[in-house]
Length: 264
Image (cartoon, rainbow, N blue to C red; front, top):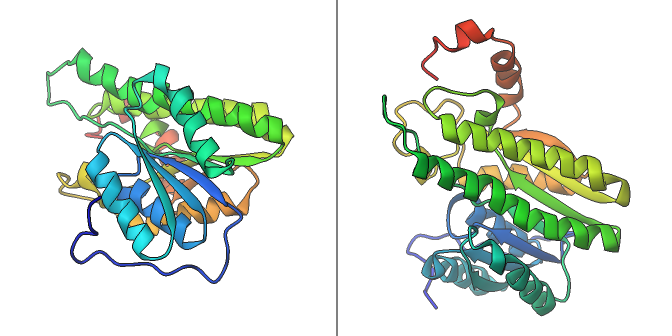
């Protein structure tokens, strides 16, 4: 087990207990996923951290445990779809049930001009869409049967339009948002809260190369806003932070012949 990284803030337990007693965060090794796991644990939830990078998962878990929280780790590649039921069952059994599933895994590649790379586009679809379906579908069946629970899927404002600079990524996020909407329409009637999160710029490794990041927020702030939406209920689709809702509205209404001329 790895020790907490130098300079890592140790969060104390929240005086306001969470309604989420048992949570799985898929994609919890860094960025928003790691912050979501830490904040859930600080609220008193027993958190399962899932991801490919076991050493980084263990570092996050160590930080949680050092603050008095409960965390378990499962090494898992979200494209190993045949393993999802086994991992899901093992984690829910160990925690004694489940109240919240967060799907935060994501892949992003922005191709250079005149580069067409099927392998990279396929990986984004496999991670951002098929992996999300594999995990959230299991949670949906579980929560429908128990007549309650929350599913959170991290999509992106990038999925609002097909962008020339990130065609595969925008396609994958549009598909994920549509999947989450369909899931919401299917199971909200059973008391299940299905939350789609569409972040703008978050200061993570995926955005480190960008020269301009308007309205950028930290992973910790993003996690705070995401959990606020999850706690609020009502199966919302939420932009994080909220100012991106107006930006998305404008982007959606730009005529296609103009949008294709923009360097977006």
